[in-house]
Structures are given as structure tokens and as C-alpha cells.
Amino acid sequence: MGIIQLENVSKTFQTDGGVIEALKNVTLDIEAGDIYGIIGMSGAGKSTLVRCINHIEVPTEGKVIVQDKDLSKLTQKELRKQREHIGMIFQHFNLLMQKSVLDNVCFPLFIQGKSKSEAKKKAYELLDIVGLKDRAKAYPSQLSGGQKQRVAIARALASDPQILLCDEATSALDPQTTSSILELLKDINNRFGITIVVITHQMAVVREICNRVAIMKDGHVVESGNTIDIFNHPKSEVARELFSKDDGSDSQAQPAVADRIQNGTRVRIVYSENSAFEPVIANMILTFREPVNILKASTKNVGGVAKGEMILEFSKGSEHIEEMKAYMKDKGLELEEISDTEAGGGSHVD
Image 1 (cartoon, rainbow, N blue to C red):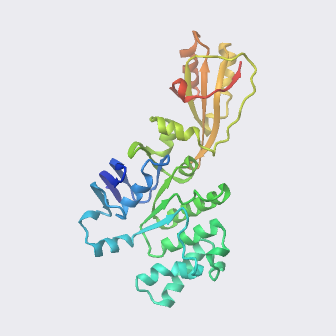
Image 2: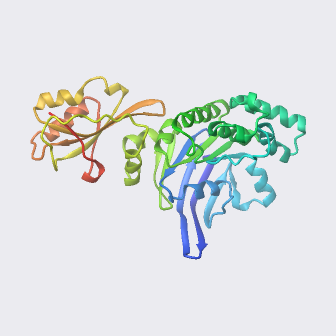
Image 3: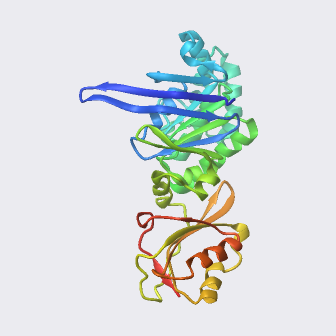
């Protein structure tokens, strides 16, 4: 049983324009120690979901169970106590601008009743963990975006949480700073075993640090599971769309050297570092003496493992399609057929 369980959670809002169903029967099980990504386009219900995990938003229906406690059955005092075990960081940092970095980190400790000396000692330790001990006396206005987020992370860790919720925590940061923040979160997860829930619309964030992922659309979870498995074999249209927009890929466009192949059978192939050394596609073309259209080619780092994909189109009317598929499978590639809408215009080889 996971550290966080959502059982048929729904959330509706009454607005002037009518009822909005933000969440619809969401069921998730997040294990202790996971870095769990919840991803979807804007309006998918991600932020509402994360606010239900700590009952900032109370679900209209369903249960949220955290550390074996049904949050709906807790008194307000018990809920406040439970929230001490759940840290949270936000897209825009939410720092107290009139307070120093040190005082920002001390703030939750003061709320818990810690003495000034005890709070400062703990705050300096946390600032050292996030690499900002030398900026303790600075104010948020004197910090970069990445530094502000590091202060927010230190503040979130002040109450020794077992769970850390990250709501679009890197969306306001440039790619290099995002990478450094993700490395920090991975280090915190490894060092302290804190379960991290990452809310994001950035596929690059999920593939960089998350071991498990749930994909949302229109308030539903449409797909969930191991990140590498979903990357290799996305089953939902929204997953494929998110992968296609992933700006962390190393895509290479190939020059056109043959007439365009149109309306042929299309397949998506996935390869790992173990299957990437042999020029399988080139050898296959030489073996069967048929042109193949490469519509897309990319490589990505998924949880520290090199993964890549290609979308291929075979010549319409070819008699060797099944043989070529078998050839690629024998070479360790994974294949699945896709529709025309899942592949864009591409490049061509023969």
C-alpha cells in the first residue's frame, strides 16, 4: 500500500458559468520513495489534484489517504499536524520578500514553536544542503530564479517532511537552471528517501527524474505506470502528443535523397543503448533493397538510461514489410504500428 492513495477522487467547482469538473474519478497509488510525475496540458487538472493530496482542496467525492490516514476523517487540528509531513514548492517560489533568506527558511520552524537559535541552526543546515549557505543574509530580490527556488526547497524541508509536492516548480526557470533544480530534487530523494510528487506540463522534467508517471487529460488519468515503459509504449493520444513536444530530445533531420514515400505502413521503433550500436536501419535497407522513409528520429535520457525512437514509413505495396519488421525485432528493436496522425512529415533514405 502506497504512502499516497487516491481512490476515485473527483472535484467540481461551481462558477458563474456553471459546474466545472476539474477531477473525475482519479485513482493513483504512489509508493514511498517514488519520484512520481503527474503531467498533462494546461487545464488537465494537475494542480487541483496536487492540492487535493494535502486537502487544501477538499475532494467532492473519493478518498485521499496519506500515510494510512484518510484526510477527510481528520479534525482541522489533526489535518494541520499531518500537513507538517507534506512540504510544497511552487512555480513562483512564494517567498516572503521582506524577509532574508535565513528568515524565510526559519518561518515554518517558528510556526512549529522552535526557538530562534534552534530554528537558525536548522535553517543553516538546510541552506547548506541546497547550496545557499553563503546567501543566508540576502533578500529574495537579490537572488536569481534558481536561487529563489532553492530557498523554497530549503523552506519546504524545514519540517522534515516525508512527502514533497512540486507544483510546476521549474516552469519559470531556464533549461540550465531547471536541470540543476532537478538534480537537487534527485539528491534530496536519494539522501532522505522523501517521496516527491512532480506536477508539470514539461515531458523533459518527467523523463529526467521521475520513476513513475501519470498522464492526465480533462480531469482523468488516461495512463500511468513506469516512466520508461510509458516512454517506450505510450498508449494514449495525449502521451504521444506530449512526447512529440518534448524539447529535450536530440532530434536529427535527415536530408532527402529519394522520392517521397506516401501513405505507406508506419511503425514506431524504440531502441536502447544496447541496440543503438549497429546501423540496423541502414543494413535492413541494404538487405531488402527497398527505400524507407524516416519521419522522425530522436534520442533522450529517460531516468539516466539512453532511449531513442524512430518513426518509419514503408513503401506502399511493399511485399517485404513483415520480413523487415521481423529483421528489426531480431536486432533488439521494439516495434508498434501507428496511425498517420502520429507522425509528421519527414526525411527520406534509400
